[in-house]
Length: 435
Image (cartoon, rainbow, N blue to C red; front, top):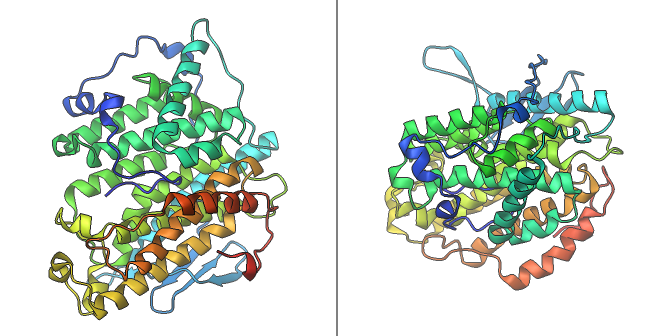
Protein backbone atom coordinates (compact mmCIF):
# COMPACT_ATOMS: atom_id res chain seq x y z
CA UNK A 1 0.00 0.00 0.00
CA UNK A 2 1.62 3.21 -1.15
CA UNK A 3 2.08 6.10 1.22
CA UNK A 4 -0.46 8.88 0.68
CA UNK A 5 1.92 11.79 0.70
CA UNK A 6 0.59 15.21 1.57
CA UNK A 7 1.07 16.22 -2.03
CA UNK A 8 -0.37 14.60 -5.18
CA UNK A 9 1.85 11.83 -6.52
CA UNK A 10 1.61 8.77 -8.69
CA UNK A 11 1.64 5.97 -6.11
CA UNK A 12 3.08 3.20 -8.25
CA UNK A 13 6.08 4.89 -9.86
CA UNK A 14 9.23 2.83 -9.49
CA UNK A 15 11.99 5.15 -8.43
CA UNK A 16 14.17 2.94 -6.24
CA UNK A 17 16.71 2.31 -8.95
CA UNK A 18 17.26 6.01 -9.56
CA UNK A 19 18.00 6.43 -5.87
CA UNK A 20 20.33 3.45 -5.87
CA UNK A 21 19.82 2.65 -2.21
CA UNK A 22 17.52 -0.35 -1.75
CA UNK A 23 20.30 -2.89 -2.11
CA UNK A 24 22.51 -1.05 0.36
CA UNK A 25 19.73 -0.95 2.95
CA UNK A 26 18.84 -4.60 2.41
CA UNK A 27 22.46 -5.78 2.64
CA UNK A 28 23.41 -3.48 5.50
CA UNK A 29 25.94 -1.50 3.49
CA UNK A 30 26.31 2.25 3.81
CA UNK A 31 26.64 4.55 0.85
CA UNK A 32 29.67 6.81 0.48
CA UNK A 33 29.46 9.76 2.83
CA UNK A 34 33.03 10.96 2.59
CA UNK A 35 31.96 14.26 1.09
CA UNK A 36 29.83 15.16 4.09
CA UNK A 37 32.00 15.74 7.15
CA UNK A 38 30.67 15.14 10.63
CA UNK A 39 32.14 18.50 11.70
CA UNK A 40 29.66 20.36 9.52
CA UNK A 41 26.64 18.35 10.50
CA UNK A 42 27.44 18.45 14.22
CA UNK A 43 25.80 21.90 14.28
CA UNK A 44 22.51 20.09 14.87
CA UNK A 45 21.49 20.26 18.53
CA UNK A 46 18.94 17.85 19.95
CA UNK A 47 15.81 19.25 21.52
CA UNK A 48 14.46 18.00 24.83
CA UNK A 49 10.83 17.11 25.01
CA UNK A 50 8.45 19.33 26.91
CA UNK A 51 5.66 17.74 28.88
CA UNK A 52 2.10 18.74 28.01
CA UNK A 53 -1.25 18.21 29.55
CA UNK A 54 -3.36 15.74 27.63
CA UNK A 55 -6.43 16.70 25.76
CA UNK A 56 -9.24 14.25 26.27
CA UNK A 57 -10.54 13.20 22.87
CA UNK A 58 -13.56 11.09 22.14
CA UNK A 59 -14.18 9.86 18.63
CA UNK A 60 -17.36 7.90 18.12
CA UNK A 61 -18.05 5.90 14.99
CA UNK A 62 -21.70 5.43 15.89
CA UNK A 63 -22.52 9.11 16.19
CA UNK A 64 -20.01 10.32 13.59
CA UNK A 65 -18.88 13.01 16.03
CA UNK A 66 -15.47 14.16 17.21
CA UNK A 67 -15.10 16.02 20.47
CA UNK A 68 -12.10 17.47 22.26
CA UNK A 69 -11.76 18.85 25.75
CA UNK A 70 -8.71 21.05 25.86
CA UNK A 71 -6.82 22.62 28.71
CA UNK A 72 -9.54 25.22 29.08
CA UNK A 73 -12.10 22.50 29.70
CA UNK A 74 -14.29 23.75 26.87
CA UNK A 75 -15.72 21.11 24.61
CA UNK A 76 -15.99 21.51 20.87
CA UNK A 77 -17.51 19.07 18.43
CA UNK A 78 -17.40 18.53 14.71
CA UNK A 79 -18.12 15.70 12.33
CA UNK A 80 -15.07 13.49 12.47
CA UNK A 81 -15.66 9.73 12.46
CA UNK A 82 -13.33 7.27 14.07
CA UNK A 83 -13.55 5.21 17.24
CA UNK A 84 -13.69 5.81 20.97
CA UNK A 85 -10.48 7.05 22.57
CA UNK A 86 -10.71 4.81 25.64
CA UNK A 87 -11.52 1.11 25.33
CA UNK A 88 -11.63 -1.70 27.87
CA UNK A 89 -9.85 -4.98 27.22
CA UNK A 90 -11.20 -8.36 28.38
CA UNK A 91 -9.27 -8.03 31.67
CA UNK A 92 -11.15 -4.85 32.48
CA UNK A 93 -8.15 -2.60 31.99
CA UNK A 94 -8.56 0.66 30.09
CA UNK A 95 -6.41 1.00 26.98
CA UNK A 96 -5.69 4.19 25.07
CA UNK A 97 -6.92 4.20 21.49
CA UNK A 98 -4.86 4.88 18.39
CA UNK A 99 -6.23 8.40 18.15
CA UNK A 100 -5.02 9.24 21.65
CA UNK A 101 -1.57 7.80 20.92
CA UNK A 102 -1.32 9.85 17.76
CA UNK A 103 -2.48 12.99 19.52
CA UNK A 104 0.48 12.70 21.89
CA UNK A 105 2.75 12.95 18.87
CA UNK A 106 0.75 15.93 17.57
CA UNK A 107 1.26 17.79 20.86
CA UNK A 108 4.99 17.13 20.73
CA UNK A 109 5.33 18.44 17.19
CA UNK A 110 3.24 21.51 17.96
CA UNK A 111 5.38 22.29 21.01
CA UNK A 112 8.51 22.48 18.85
CA UNK A 113 6.91 25.10 16.64
CA UNK A 114 5.56 27.09 19.56
CA UNK A 115 9.00 27.19 21.15
CA UNK A 116 10.44 28.47 17.87
CA UNK A 117 7.74 31.15 17.64
CA UNK A 118 8.41 32.29 21.20
CA UNK A 119 12.16 32.56 20.57
CA UNK A 120 12.15 34.03 17.05
CA UNK A 121 8.71 35.48 16.54
CA UNK A 122 8.35 33.55 13.27
CA UNK A 123 9.37 30.28 11.67
CA UNK A 124 12.45 31.79 10.08
CA UNK A 125 15.14 29.29 9.23
CA UNK A 126 18.38 29.17 11.14
CA UNK A 127 21.47 30.58 9.39
CA UNK A 128 23.79 28.18 7.64
CA UNK A 129 27.05 27.24 9.34
CA UNK A 130 29.18 26.84 6.24
CA UNK A 131 32.56 25.16 6.08
CA UNK A 132 34.76 25.47 2.98
CA UNK A 133 33.66 23.15 0.20
CA UNK A 134 30.26 22.20 1.67
CA UNK A 135 27.96 24.90 0.29
CA UNK A 136 28.17 23.69 -3.32
CA UNK A 137 27.57 20.09 -2.21
CA UNK A 138 24.46 21.11 -0.27
CA UNK A 139 23.16 23.10 -3.20
CA UNK A 140 23.67 20.09 -5.44
CA UNK A 141 21.88 17.85 -2.93
CA UNK A 142 18.82 20.10 -2.78
CA UNK A 143 18.80 20.50 -6.56
CA UNK A 144 18.70 16.72 -6.94
CA UNK A 145 15.76 16.51 -4.52
CA UNK A 146 13.98 19.16 -6.57
CA UNK A 147 14.58 17.19 -9.76
CA UNK A 148 13.08 14.05 -8.22
CA UNK A 149 10.05 16.00 -6.97
CA UNK A 150 9.58 17.65 -10.37
CA UNK A 151 9.72 14.28 -12.13
CA UNK A 152 7.41 12.29 -9.86
CA UNK A 153 5.13 14.93 -8.28
CA UNK A 154 4.62 17.49 -11.00
CA UNK A 155 1.53 19.18 -9.56
CA UNK A 156 2.99 19.55 -6.10
CA UNK A 157 6.35 20.70 -7.48
CA UNK A 158 4.68 23.59 -9.30
CA UNK A 159 3.07 24.69 -6.05
CA UNK A 160 6.36 24.61 -4.16
CA UNK A 161 7.80 27.17 -6.56
CA UNK A 162 5.63 29.78 -4.82
CA UNK A 163 7.38 29.12 -1.51
CA UNK A 164 10.51 30.85 -0.30
CA UNK A 165 13.69 29.12 -1.54
CA UNK A 166 14.49 27.76 1.93
CA UNK A 167 11.03 26.27 2.43
CA UNK A 168 10.72 24.68 -0.99
CA UNK A 169 14.14 23.05 -0.74
CA UNK A 170 13.23 21.64 2.66
CA UNK A 171 9.92 20.27 1.37
CA UNK A 172 11.75 18.64 -1.54
CA UNK A 173 14.12 16.95 0.91
CA UNK A 174 11.21 15.58 2.99
CA UNK A 175 9.38 14.44 -0.13
CA UNK A 176 12.40 12.45 -1.30
CA UNK A 177 12.93 10.78 2.07
CA UNK A 178 9.26 9.75 2.25
CA UNK A 179 9.41 8.47 -1.31
CA UNK A 180 12.49 6.39 -0.62
CA UNK A 181 10.97 4.99 2.56
CA UNK A 182 7.77 3.99 0.76
CA UNK A 183 9.73 2.32 -2.02
CA UNK A 184 11.35 -0.01 0.50
CA UNK A 185 8.11 -1.98 0.89
CA UNK A 186 6.18 -0.91 -2.20
CA UNK A 187 8.85 -0.70 -4.89
CA UNK A 188 10.47 -3.18 -7.25
CA UNK A 189 12.80 -4.52 -4.53
CA UNK A 190 10.06 -4.88 -1.92
CA UNK A 191 10.18 -8.68 -1.93
CA UNK A 192 13.75 -8.54 -0.65
CA UNK A 193 13.12 -6.10 2.19
CA UNK A 194 13.16 -7.59 5.70
CA UNK A 195 12.46 -6.15 9.17
CA UNK A 196 16.22 -5.96 9.69
CA UNK A 197 16.54 -3.83 6.58
CA UNK A 198 13.99 -1.41 8.03
CA UNK A 199 15.93 -1.40 11.30
CA UNK A 200 19.01 -0.35 9.34
CA UNK A 201 17.00 2.36 7.57
CA UNK A 202 15.85 3.68 10.96
CA UNK A 203 19.43 3.65 12.27
CA UNK A 204 20.42 5.60 9.19
CA UNK A 205 17.63 8.08 9.95
CA UNK A 206 18.92 8.59 13.49
CA UNK A 207 22.42 9.25 12.15
CA UNK A 208 20.95 11.70 9.67
CA UNK A 209 19.28 13.65 12.49
CA UNK A 210 22.60 13.70 14.34
CA UNK A 211 24.34 15.27 11.36
CA UNK A 212 25.82 12.13 9.80
CA UNK A 213 24.15 11.66 6.39
CA UNK A 214 25.14 8.71 4.24
CA UNK A 215 24.51 10.14 0.79
CA UNK A 216 23.58 13.31 -1.04
CA UNK A 217 19.82 12.98 -0.60
CA UNK A 218 20.23 12.29 3.11
CA UNK A 219 22.43 15.38 3.35
CA UNK A 220 19.60 17.64 2.17
CA UNK A 221 17.25 16.32 4.86
CA UNK A 222 19.99 16.49 7.50
CA UNK A 223 20.43 20.17 6.70
CA UNK A 224 16.66 20.69 6.76
CA UNK A 225 16.21 19.32 10.29
CA UNK A 226 18.94 21.67 11.48
CA UNK A 227 17.14 24.71 10.09
CA UNK A 228 13.52 23.92 10.95
CA UNK A 229 11.83 22.66 14.16
CA UNK A 230 11.32 19.17 12.77
CA UNK A 231 11.20 16.22 15.18
CA UNK A 232 12.33 12.70 14.37
CA UNK A 233 9.22 10.93 15.72
CA UNK A 234 6.99 11.22 12.61
CA UNK A 235 9.86 9.87 10.49
CA UNK A 236 10.33 6.91 12.83
CA UNK A 237 6.56 6.37 12.84
CA UNK A 238 6.52 6.20 9.04
CA UNK A 239 9.12 3.45 9.18
CA UNK A 240 6.90 1.69 11.72
CA UNK A 241 4.13 1.84 9.13
CA UNK A 242 6.42 0.06 6.68
CA UNK A 243 7.04 -2.63 9.30
CA UNK A 244 3.29 -2.98 9.73
CA UNK A 245 2.94 -3.59 5.98
CA UNK A 246 5.42 -6.46 6.22
CA UNK A 247 3.56 -8.30 8.97
CA UNK A 248 -0.09 -7.27 8.66
CA UNK A 249 -2.65 -7.58 5.86
CA UNK A 250 -5.93 -7.25 7.79
CA UNK A 251 -7.33 -4.63 10.19
CA UNK A 252 -10.02 -5.75 12.59
CA UNK A 253 -11.51 -2.29 13.19
CA UNK A 254 -11.09 1.36 12.31
CA UNK A 255 -8.96 2.02 15.36
CA UNK A 256 -6.28 -0.27 13.92
CA UNK A 257 -6.69 1.17 10.45
CA UNK A 258 -6.46 4.73 11.77
CA UNK A 259 -3.08 3.98 13.35
CA UNK A 260 -1.83 2.51 10.09
CA UNK A 261 -3.05 5.56 8.16
CA UNK A 262 -1.26 7.82 10.63
CA UNK A 263 1.97 5.86 10.29
CA UNK A 264 2.13 5.89 6.51
CA UNK A 265 0.45 9.21 5.69
CA UNK A 266 -0.56 11.34 8.66
CA UNK A 267 3.11 11.54 9.57
CA UNK A 268 3.79 13.50 6.37
CA UNK A 269 1.56 16.31 7.58
CA UNK A 270 3.43 16.50 10.88
CA UNK A 271 6.75 16.59 9.03
CA UNK A 272 5.60 19.32 6.69
CA UNK A 273 3.91 21.91 8.92
CA UNK A 274 7.18 23.24 10.41
CA UNK A 275 8.49 23.74 6.87
CA UNK A 276 5.36 25.29 5.40
CA UNK A 277 4.94 27.59 8.37
CA UNK A 278 1.90 29.09 10.05
CA UNK A 279 0.71 32.51 8.90
CA UNK A 280 1.79 35.25 11.34
CA UNK A 281 -1.74 36.66 11.36
CA UNK A 282 -3.34 33.28 12.12
CA UNK A 283 -5.42 33.11 15.29
CA UNK A 284 -5.53 29.30 15.24
CA UNK A 285 -3.72 27.28 17.87
CA UNK A 286 -0.67 25.34 16.73
CA UNK A 287 -2.41 22.10 17.73
CA UNK A 288 -5.34 22.93 15.46
CA UNK A 289 -3.06 23.37 12.46
CA UNK A 290 -1.26 20.11 13.21
CA UNK A 291 -4.57 18.28 13.66
CA UNK A 292 -5.69 19.54 10.24
CA UNK A 293 -2.43 18.37 8.65
CA UNK A 294 -2.88 14.99 10.29
CA UNK A 295 -6.48 14.81 9.03
CA UNK A 296 -5.35 15.49 5.46
CA UNK A 297 -2.87 12.64 5.61
CA UNK A 298 -5.53 10.30 7.00
CA UNK A 299 -8.03 11.43 4.34
CA UNK A 300 -5.52 10.87 1.53
CA UNK A 301 -4.63 7.40 2.76
CA UNK A 302 -8.26 6.37 3.23
CA UNK A 303 -8.85 7.56 -0.34
CA UNK A 304 -5.91 5.45 -1.52
CA UNK A 305 -7.36 2.44 0.27
CA UNK A 306 -10.81 2.87 -1.27
CA UNK A 307 -9.36 3.45 -4.73
CA UNK A 308 -7.06 0.39 -4.56
CA UNK A 309 -9.41 -2.26 -3.15
CA UNK A 310 -9.13 -4.49 -6.21
CA UNK A 311 -5.39 -4.01 -6.61
CA UNK A 312 -4.79 -4.82 -2.94
CA UNK A 313 -7.07 -7.85 -3.11
CA UNK A 314 -4.91 -9.29 -5.89
CA UNK A 315 -2.04 -9.07 -3.41
CA UNK A 316 -4.25 -10.80 -0.82
CA UNK A 317 -4.48 -7.63 1.24
CA UNK A 318 -7.63 -6.03 2.63
CA UNK A 319 -7.20 -2.54 4.09
CA UNK A 320 -10.80 -2.26 5.29
CA UNK A 321 -12.18 -2.61 8.85
CA UNK A 322 -13.17 -6.25 9.26
CA UNK A 323 -15.89 -5.51 11.81
CA UNK A 324 -17.54 -2.98 9.48
CA UNK A 325 -17.40 -5.44 6.60
CA UNK A 326 -19.12 -8.05 8.75
CA UNK A 327 -21.76 -5.54 9.87
CA UNK A 328 -22.51 -4.86 6.19
CA UNK A 329 -22.89 -8.59 5.52
CA UNK A 330 -19.60 -8.79 3.62
CA UNK A 331 -16.38 -10.75 3.99
CA UNK A 332 -12.95 -11.04 2.39
CA UNK A 333 -14.41 -13.60 0.01
CA UNK A 334 -16.78 -10.97 -1.38
CA UNK A 335 -13.85 -8.65 -1.99
CA UNK A 336 -11.81 -11.35 -3.71
CA UNK A 337 -14.86 -12.20 -5.88
CA UNK A 338 -14.91 -8.55 -6.98
CA UNK A 339 -18.65 -8.22 -7.51
CA UNK A 340 -20.44 -4.90 -7.03
CA UNK A 341 -23.62 -5.59 -5.07
CA UNK A 342 -26.04 -3.40 -3.15
CA UNK A 343 -24.31 -4.45 0.06
CA UNK A 344 -20.98 -3.30 -1.36
CA UNK A 345 -22.43 0.00 -2.55
CA UNK A 346 -23.88 0.74 0.87
CA UNK A 347 -20.62 -0.19 2.55
CA UNK A 348 -18.63 2.03 0.21
CA UNK A 349 -20.97 4.98 0.75
CA UNK A 350 -20.17 4.90 4.47
CA UNK A 351 -16.42 4.58 3.85
CA UNK A 352 -16.46 7.51 1.43
CA UNK A 353 -18.46 9.58 3.91
CA UNK A 354 -15.80 9.00 6.55
CA UNK A 355 -12.97 9.97 4.20
CA UNK A 356 -14.79 13.17 3.25
CA UNK A 357 -15.20 14.08 6.89
CA UNK A 358 -11.44 13.89 7.32
CA UNK A 359 -11.05 16.16 4.29
CA UNK A 360 -13.52 18.58 5.92
CA UNK A 361 -11.40 18.58 9.06
CA UNK A 362 -8.26 19.19 7.00
CA UNK A 363 -9.77 22.24 5.30
CA UNK A 364 -9.94 24.04 8.63
CA UNK A 365 -6.19 24.25 8.85
CA UNK A 366 -5.01 24.91 5.29
CA UNK A 367 -5.83 28.63 5.39
CA UNK A 368 -3.79 28.94 8.59
CA UNK A 369 -0.57 28.05 6.78
CA UNK A 370 1.79 30.73 5.54
CA UNK A 371 0.46 32.23 2.31
CA UNK A 372 3.13 30.85 -0.09
CA UNK A 373 2.57 27.30 1.22
CA UNK A 374 -1.16 27.05 0.74
CA UNK A 375 -1.47 26.40 -2.97
CA UNK A 376 0.20 22.95 -3.12
CA UNK A 377 -1.76 21.81 -0.06
CA UNK A 378 -5.09 23.05 -1.46
CA UNK A 379 -4.27 21.36 -4.78
CA UNK A 380 -3.57 18.09 -2.98
CA UNK A 381 -6.76 18.30 -0.97
CA UNK A 382 -9.08 19.18 -3.85
CA UNK A 383 -7.59 16.72 -6.34
CA UNK A 384 -7.37 13.79 -3.96
CA UNK A 385 -10.91 14.45 -2.81
CA UNK A 386 -12.04 14.15 -6.42
CA UNK A 387 -10.95 10.50 -6.45
CA UNK A 388 -13.86 9.76 -4.13
CA UNK A 389 -16.21 11.33 -6.66
CA UNK A 390 -14.69 9.15 -9.38
CA UNK A 391 -15.31 6.01 -7.31
CA UNK A 392 -18.96 7.00 -7.12
CA UNK A 393 -19.00 7.73 -10.86
CA UNK A 394 -17.72 4.17 -11.43
CA UNK A 395 -20.75 2.85 -9.51
CA UNK A 396 -18.43 1.87 -6.63
CA UNK A 397 -16.56 -0.61 -8.81
CA UNK A 398 -13.11 -0.28 -7.31
CA UNK A 399 -12.42 -3.93 -8.06
CA UNK A 400 -11.69 -3.65 -11.77
CA UNK A 401 -11.86 0.11 -12.41
CA UNK A 402 -9.24 2.49 -11.09
CA UNK A 403 -10.62 5.88 -10.11
CA UNK A 404 -8.40 8.72 -11.23
CA UNK A 405 -8.63 12.44 -11.87
CA UNK A 406 -8.21 13.33 -15.55
CA UNK A 407 -5.71 15.94 -16.70
CA UNK A 408 -8.60 18.18 -17.73
CA UNK A 409 -10.02 18.11 -14.20
CA UNK A 410 -6.59 18.74 -12.72
CA UNK A 411 -6.24 21.82 -14.91
CA UNK A 412 -9.70 22.90 -13.83
CA UNK A 413 -8.98 22.57 -10.10
CA UNK A 414 -5.50 24.12 -10.03
CA UNK A 415 -6.78 27.71 -10.41
CA UNK A 416 -9.50 26.95 -7.85
CA UNK A 417 -6.81 25.77 -5.45
CA UNK A 418 -4.81 28.92 -6.14
CA UNK A 419 -7.87 31.06 -5.41
CA UNK A 420 -8.38 29.24 -2.13
CA UNK A 421 -4.73 29.83 -1.24
CA UNK A 422 -5.30 33.59 -1.39
CA UNK A 423 -7.94 33.49 1.35
CA UNK A 424 -6.74 34.95 4.67
CA UNK A 425 -6.53 32.75 7.79
CA UNK A 426 -9.65 31.83 9.79
CA UNK A 427 -12.03 32.92 7.02
CA UNK A 428 -14.84 30.42 6.57
CA UNK A 429 -15.84 29.22 3.13
CA UNK A 430 -19.38 30.01 2.11
CA UNK A 431 -21.43 27.06 0.76
CA UNK A 432 -21.27 28.55 -2.75
CA UNK A 433 -17.47 28.31 -2.76
CA UNK A 434 -17.29 24.67 -1.76
CA UNK A 435 -16.39 22.18 -4.46
